[in-house]
Length: 484
Ligand SMILES: *Cc1c(COP(=O)(O)O)cnc(C)c1O
Image (cartoon, rainbow, N blue to C red):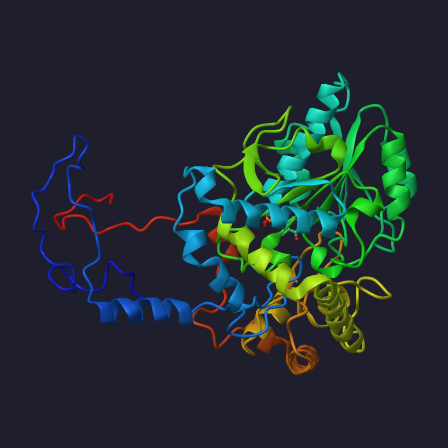
């Protein structure tokens, strides 16, 4: 497919703007050369973007069971509400008296998220889950430092944690101590007891964890860490499995983040704006980033907490993403939130128990919102890998599940149907999985050659990772600078 710069030619295009009828003003820092812009008519332009759109797979195209990423359908009404001019036609530096509605929306969402998580205060600033982790860890650090306890330099991270957990801990300046999971996919309590000590700043737990299991020992885990003087961080990106049913605050956690762009109605993927609010118990409240919203009588105002770690994001976070979450929460209400979680768990179990008749599951028993299959035996017997099955799914219009993650499972495929898929869609997807298994037994070569029906076939992933070409090279000598 041609790039937009390879289409059209100078002179082509459509300008609907009338010619300028006021004197032109020249600025001091004017650019030397005109910007390089594509020359296309509106018609060609629309077709170009439609073609690009046709080449990707989104939740609007078909089933997208990308475990750990929660690619679910989000109600369009939440987009409509977040797009209201009262939310979008405001400036972040406007006097607060003129944006009371926006502050009320932020404050109401903070209260709602406190109710959902069992925390005492929330910041809406972090722009993503990993950013929330980083923020939460800075709170933990500030807490220990404030108490004059400088020996607590270690964060314990179980091997079933999301990959961002150890990375965030390092970013926040901690040393990471990894502890193993048992064969049941839960934290090994003996390993945890052996790991904690006077150097423990805290523990980060992803729950339900990356193998889709709710840790049955969760209360013992938080007790062990607290008795050693550490704090407990809950990675709540998987909250769509438990929201409205159990709360991190009640499980003994001191701080947690949520992914609004997974659980609460903001679409994500492709680097779109996300939001990873952080909730904390009262003991960490004074360290939260500022500004925070407070309500005095009928008025809303900003304030900065006494020992704030400072800003972690410009202004107030990705504001319209938070409005979508508020709209979603208020539409679902107290009954709807747990119902959504229950459906996420029901759907995952529905698919898992049907597929368990064909595929090996990495763990036995009930799962939460996602489950992990291991294709180790199939790979050994037929040469067909998890990658081959994933590529085969593409030919059936299904986005592959998460592959080769979590690392503790060999030939892993991690499936998360989400609560928004119908029984019919899941039945069709299961039938495709079953057919691919039969294909693997009968004709492994056909799967090594998949996909056949996608715009591109197998990509050279090693080269793509090692020598990524991230910049378009313009042909030189066309009269414009080579660097736009
Ligand atoms: C997605 C996810 C994260 C990271 O969230 P981002 O918004 O991608 O930074 C962290 N933990 C878990 C369990 C996740 O699923």
